Image 1: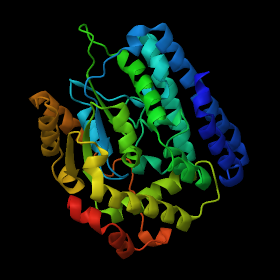
Image 2: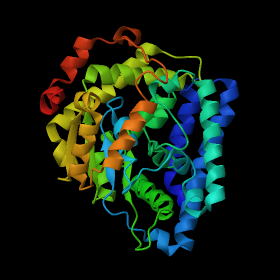
Image 3: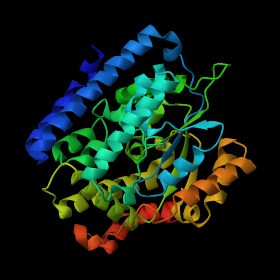
Image 4: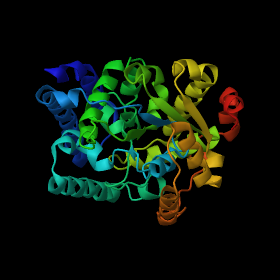
Length: 365
């Protein structure tokens, strides 16, 4: 059975949940159910590819991956590019139900989106400050870590739960095979958007965690193009720690803020220096647009014009109007204020700057 490929990841993660995560008793069963759901999605994906040769052969064109460390503006880029008529950015409900999305009729798609929105509302009850940090909505684009997590091979699991042994195991792995199943799930959900000529809109995907596994991603997506966001690592590290506090608090009352701060300082500072030394080699020469956070937030339409030029997409008046409407609906602070300090997490801004000096010089942040 195909899911046997991922038994080691499942066992590593399950063992870490039991020994390290400090979940509330009431939250153990929901988390266990999510593991079974991952196994089912992979099994259903295999069945879909077997029964539907057109899905297995679905050409994805030249997908775009929005990358960069967490809290660098990648969500804004993702949401704005998704407004382009020649693009499809998988929405949260599609990522939650990738096989069902491939098979659903119009009425069923509405029901799947409602189910996903109910999940969002339930999660907001557990993590009430999350909307101010990372706003979720079933009908908006979301991060494709949901596809990779079905193989138990995603950093989102060490973000959501205290599982240090699993995290160390994960960062020593080759994720080529998990990315193959990421692609197969993507082929399924994108097949629902197939045009008369057999092509699909440009898939635009986003997940900060890809940034740690670029070489593995490129092996599976050799036609990929990249938009790489960059922000002052002090802001990225501390804001990421704050996000981690919020999502771990959804399932646990035992949070060590200094431990959380140390984890994300280490993850980001180590990878930042690797990117400074060899980012282009890790991407194996694939096209990449570097986009500083400060330029994005200063003038989002101008940043989108740059992105469209890079991707060979027209920058129409209609697209620009859509950008303006999105920015009005999701203006800064509309979902709440996100406040944090380095000291809360036992961090020092000077230490972060020192540990990321090569990255800041290489990418001008």
